[in-house]
Length: 252
Image (cartoon, rainbow, N blue to C red; front, side, top):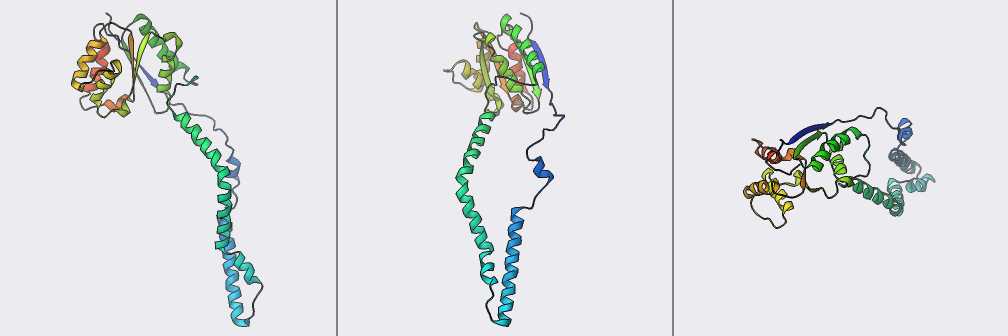
């Protein structure tokens, strides 16, 4: 049996050369006076008019026609009117907000996209690596690195969902962010290989070595966020990457 094939690919971070013009650029270019400032100006004018009427009432002791007008423009009544308008119009504004939240939640869900843009080179490298190993039943390992959000997981799941690979391998996907300890990765892999298996982490590694060298379809193991399994002596990572190098191994 030939030694396991190894490969490494790095996902670059692309920068947009042209900034897309937003709808609110015109508003930023020509800012208007804020409503809060206008409300404060009206309140200040009302307060000044009240002071003037009080001083005039003390000297002349006669009511002035500006007092009712000043009371109508008091900050408390203006605030109540604005609050009533906001409550009345809130049901109409809640519908688009809920719709936007639902769309954002759906977009952030970890699903396999039907089309991936600007990653043709990376998709070709992953497919060219996976296809001969699956078709010729050879073990191997690939390490994919890159900044968060650059499409590493999306590209891998997109290639593995190809219909040409249907029925040729068994997929095991593990999100290492959900692991309690790095050594518990062996238990997660063993449980996905055999749902009835239940033992400690020390017994999981010998079980995997026997099961992965046994007869059966090829097994593709995807470890997302693998840096979470880093330890002081890196024993967990060494043990995982040694599994494809075993004799008669069927692990990719």
